[in-house]
Structure formats: structure tokens, C-alpha cells
Length: 285
Length: 312
Image (cartoon, rainbow over all chains, first blue to last red; front, side):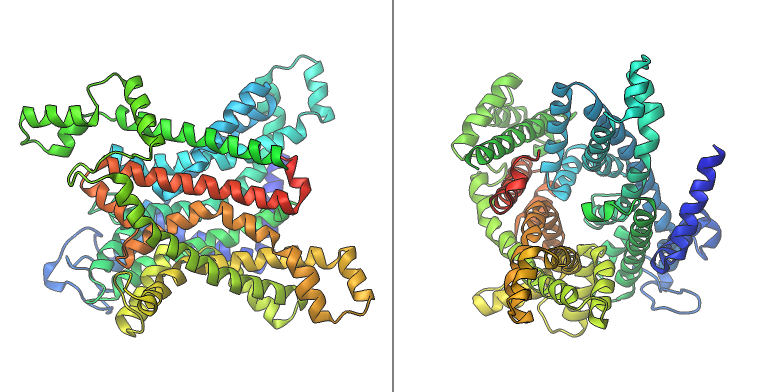
């Protein structure tokens, strides 16, 4: 445990030394901080209406102006970050956990199971993501859970395939063969010996995946098929902004910039993490 | 090569079959009577029975699936619940608009990306290379629908350089209507392709046929353009093929933002009216499109690089 902690420290130092990585670390840090402490930071209640001061431009009272119901855009942007992470983190970690398990089983288990799991992965991947999301939303109705489910389902194959490839390259290495000859169970070999060797690569993949997930949540909410109003979401802000684009530009700007910032931050962080954790991955993508 | 092609297309067909079956079963597994949802609470029992029979919902599930596949093989995707028109007609009427948008996006972004990547690789560590690298990383992450909205705000609403709505009529008008949506979809691809081409160029430039060309005294420009670039753009083909699903997804958003006709707009409109046959038809066609383009990319890759034939 002591060793892994210092390894984590080294990775963070490595990322912080890279200018792009440092920038990513700062942006992601700010977003996470705002999401955690959202309700202490926001100057107004993000869903409180104030019809008298609707559709205002930026001012000292309302940093990013107000929307058609007089709600403070800045407060909704901050609170929207919380919703974005509430969708992105469970979805990404859930997909990673399931993909990791299935991928390791595919790589280590019998051939027929491998073929079956690969067919399963390929089938999910064969749906264009947004089309799949739209079909699911059409069937089970829009909600935060639906978005999490869709994101999880569509990204399981990515993690599964990488975990499978890594397991395949490791399965005949000496330390695994030694363990197997001593009669270790499959669960023990995969959980205790494979996992620590694969998790790093998947963690990098997860960091690079978060922007896609944030964009998908915002996209679905923009279409009115994601989180329900009045929940503040960056996508919902864009939806309001789109219908009012000729009256006020501030809603589109307020909803769009945080998405771009968040995708940039997580991309920088992910790329830098990848270079630090495993420079060889660079060629694979 | 032929056996690889057969195997690859066999796999595609299998995937498509599983995907379509899953989709079909998913619709049937949804709680609630689809007929009731489609007709609303005030429908008479006779009307409900009529629609149930028309959609074949009174048959056992395996028989429904068989009928569905039988129709599908004849190019019949069912009928629109409201207008009674054939779903195949409706979907194929919208498809060209989406394809036009996707091709325009790929055309401009791939040309610019390849040029940038090739230039950066031929002049590594110069200012242009650095700028190209910065653009690559920054634009790769920009979600198409956010770019589309900001482009709409700046170039259509405020500057009024380009039209904000529709697909236009006549060649020049259509082109004019394509500029902003194609820009939004292609933007993130420019950097991605530039990066890809740069990396593969640098690799190819070190190979012996390029060194030989140089040793023969062929002009540097010719070496780069003819001997290196021709091979270095191969990965782009694969990436575009595999990226088809991504492009389709971006096109959905671009169509909504710019109120363009197309598959995406069709799906969204059908979801709000719960017109399941159309939703399924469009998802099916776009999935087929994606599966075929991925397989084609693999084939082209295998044709040009024999090593890819033995890989999974």
C-alpha cells in the first residue's frame, strides 16, 4: 500500500511538470471544487425564478445575466457542473468496472466465451452512440438515470476490449503461469495479479472518456431528452439559449463555455496522464 | 484477401443481425402497451384493436420477429403510424441530406487536416508545427453541438454571413447552407487527422523507400508529396470509416441546431410523437451505415496493408 501511494504521488508530480497537464489539473480542480461546493458558491438559488429581472445581460448583480424566467445564469452554470459530474463519474466508473471484468474474462476464459463477449462488444459498438441513446430514451423516457445507463452501455466495449488485449498479452507471462501451476483460482489470478497491471491503462482511458460523457449528457439535455427541467444542466442552458438566441447571447455562451472548458481540462489531463503512466499507449490511439 | 473479405462481411452481417434483434426485443420489452401510448388515452377499443392487428402485436413474439425479418428482407421497414406512408420511403428521403452533410464535413476537415499534418511532419519543431499541435489538442475535444451553437450565434445571428435555418435549394444555396453545420462537425476532426497524419508521416519518412528516393536526388517536395504522403494517409481512411458513427451522432445535433432536414431531425421529431416505426427505421439504417463503413475501412486497410488481414 505504501508503495502504491508513492507511485500515485509520482504520477501527479509527473502530470504537474507537463504544462498541458498542469493546465488540465487546474481546470479539472476548479470544476470539481465548484461542483462539490456549488451550493455555497452560487449567489442565487439556481432554480428560483424572478420574472421581473428576466433576460438581463451581464451586470454586477448577475455575472452572466438571467434567463427567460429570471434565473441567474452564473448560478445555473455552477450548479450545472454538479449535474455533469453526477452523470459522468458514476457512468464512467460503472462502465470501467463492468468492461474491466468482462474484458479480463474474455481474455483469460475459454475461447467460446471470448467470442461471445467480443460479439457482444461489437454489437453495442455498432450503434452510433447518439442514435442508440435516442432509441433508449424513446423507449424508457428521459431522466438522469437513463443518461447514466446509456453512457455506461455505450462505453463498456471500449474498456472491455482494452482489458481483453492487456489480459491476452499477460496471460502467458511467467508470474501468471507460476500462480496457475500453484493452483490459484481464476478469480484470484484475475483479481490479485492481472488487475493491478491493467487498471492504470484503463484509468487513463477513463480520464479521456469523461469529456465525451459530459458532452453526451449536455447533448441529450439540449435535445430535451436528458435531465428534466428545472434541474440546472449545461445542456438545458443551451436549450433555453437556443430558443432565445435572437434575444440574448448569454445563455448559449454561459452553457457552451463550461462544456468546452471541461472537455479541454479533462482532455489535457488525460493526455498528460497517458504520457506519464504509459508512453507506449500514445501510438495506439 | 477474398477470404478476409468474406469473413469480415460475415461478421458485419452477424453483428447487424444481433443488433437489430436486440433492438426489436427492446421495443417489445418496454412496459406499457405501445398502441395505447401511440393513440393516447382517448382512443376507442376498436381503434386500439385495429392498430394492434395492423402492427402485428397480437402475434406471439417469435412470429413477430420472423415477420419483421421477412419484411426487412423485402426492404419494408413498416409503416408510419400517423400518415400511413412507408417508413423506408420516409427514411430514404431524409438520408441524402445527412450524407451530404457528413461528406462535406469530412471533405474539408480531412483536406485541411492532411495538409496541416503533412506540413508539420515535413517541418518538425517549427512554429507551424507547434501551432498545428496546439490546434490539434484544443479542437479534438470540442463537442460538435456546442461548436454548432456558437457558430450559429456568431456567424448566422450576429454577423449574418450564413443562413441559420434549413438546407436550401439549388446548388449554391445548398452549399451556403452547408458551411456552418459542416464547419461544426468537421472542426474536431481537423486536429485529430492532422495529428494522425503527422505521426504516420514521421514514421514513413524514416522508411527505406523514402531514403532511397532521397538518395536518388529526387526533390524534397516530391519525396514528401509522392513517396511519403501517399502511404501516410492510409490510417486516415480507417479512422474515417470507424468514425462514421461519431459523424452520424454529430450530424444529429447539427441538423437540430440548424433546423436542417435529415435523419437526426427525423428521429427527434418521431421521438416526441412516439412514432416508434420511424425511430426504429432510422436507427436501423444508421446502424447499417455505420457497420458497412467500418467493414469497408477494414477492407481498404487490408487491401493496402497485408499485415492487417490476419489481425482479429
